[in-house]
Length: 342
Picture 1 (spheres, helix red, strand yellow):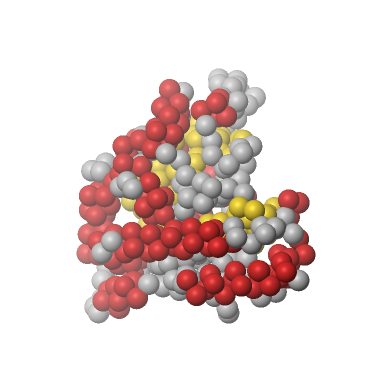
Picture 2 (picture 1 turned 45 degrees about the vertical axis):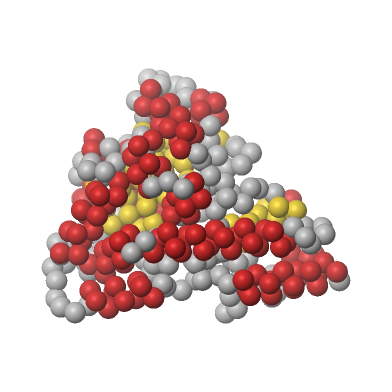
């Protein structure tokens, strides 16, 4: 498959991660997380996010999101999220089916919720005919590649807590956000008041590495049983733990995210020079959203795989990865220029 800009899930695995898996493959170890590597990782999460952090490794991002939501909500309750949120658009109704709760979506101009937007959904408390708002969920970065500032996250957490609710953060690309904002994971999550975090690494060089991290101890009730019921308990968990340990202890997360963010900025700078192409959202992480003639992007898709994000407005999404090269970008832009000229 030609290296393209479809998704950071299309990239391979960082060599450091393969080495970590090989190292963990030396001897037998207890299963289901009762091994030394997973124990070390749990302490590493506490060092990274704070002493109250309780991590639960899962197989994928949907599992992390659903387990987080299950910790916060019961079936009669609801999660407020952006219309574009991954939990609403790309998880095939998993939160609704598995947790049974409702998603209350909000239209946003840039993928970001604000207290004012959330307040439009804060009603019906105590009214037995309505699903009860119990959590706010945000993605960092958002599905449109935009970022919440630390102040914006704190404002949403404060609003949630004022109403007896929780704040969840979908951090599948949290490393890209931390690098872009120049802050630590803890400063962006625990210190702002986030209660539950979906923390991932698959999109940033891991083979498989996602986790539900409960930052509010109140939520850590019987989660190990719920993870098992959701089929998200890995028997050879040490291989997932080894990846995340290498990811966090070697600054691999930072190096990979810095590179993919930089490649996205470079891609945006180069396509801006192509007449007829318009960047539609701020390029703050590792994605570029562009508007261009439909016949051009259809033709471009014959050469490169990428997603048409909003076909009604001819908006497409180009993602950069930790292994994207400047040559990849130059070749892609040259093809785009040729098609625009044609």
